[in-house]
Image 1 (cartoon, one colour):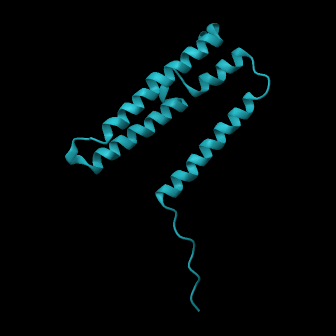
Image 2 (cartoon, one colour; image 1 turned 180 degrees about the horizontal axis):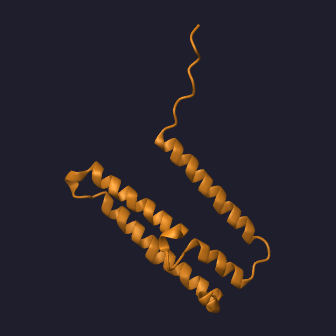
Amino acid sequence: MTAAPGPAPRTRIDRVHASAGIVQLALQQIEDELRGETGAQELAQILRELHHEDHRQDGVFGSLAQLLTVAGQAAGRIEPDRDGEMSCPLHEAAALITENAGLQTYYATRALDPQGEAA
């Protein structure tokens, strides 16, 4: 008797796909929370959870920027002859996320709750 072959091992892409699905579910849960009554101060607090001005790496935008930075480093290892041609756009994208999207979210929280910054 031969044993039946087990399931094929999951590839890196399979694991990334599953993780991205978890992220989407988490964002959907936040979206569901916003469907109820939400005041300006509470909304500002929710936005602050996505973007931490003092500790950018702790927020969602910081985590996404870190992911792109790591991808940029990997791209530099893949094609070292091209002087990081693939990694440069990834590093720029990471900077844009923290500088642009993060900054705009910060401005939104200030507009919603100007007094909340001291909290």
